[in-house]
Length: 151
Image (cartoon, rainbow, N blue to C red; front, side, top):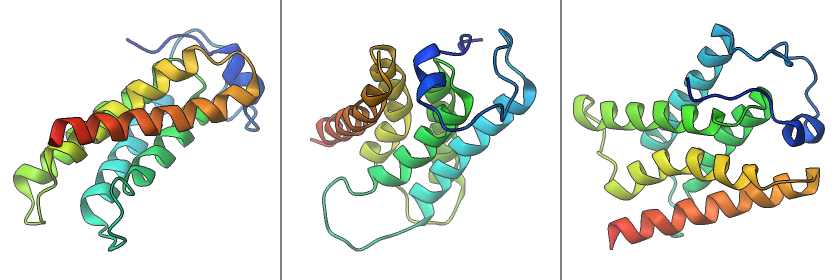
């Protein structure tokens, strides 16, 4: 499994205590179900909710918020990747099998990349204040990659 033991920086920055019984080196089934459920919800929201703001990249908020919530609850390195993979699977499934307007390759890229970028950015977070900055960097990096893929 690609989830590692809990990360000390994330534990000290979190305001959630003992939600999933942290301090264990092994990953619980409830934790994996929670992460996959948040990924599915991010994919569903991204595919089904249409806003008419006409701002490039504004839908990244629909992806970053569930991903950051999952990482905050889980507090494990690799939690963002698990959420991103389940969000990508949900987006691809809805693109293939549902009669909704299909989402583009840029949105699928941001579904997959946001969690990975968040994990990478949080790996360098040393203080609790850096966690907030890591979320911003991950969102900007994911949006930039999505724009690059679309171009």
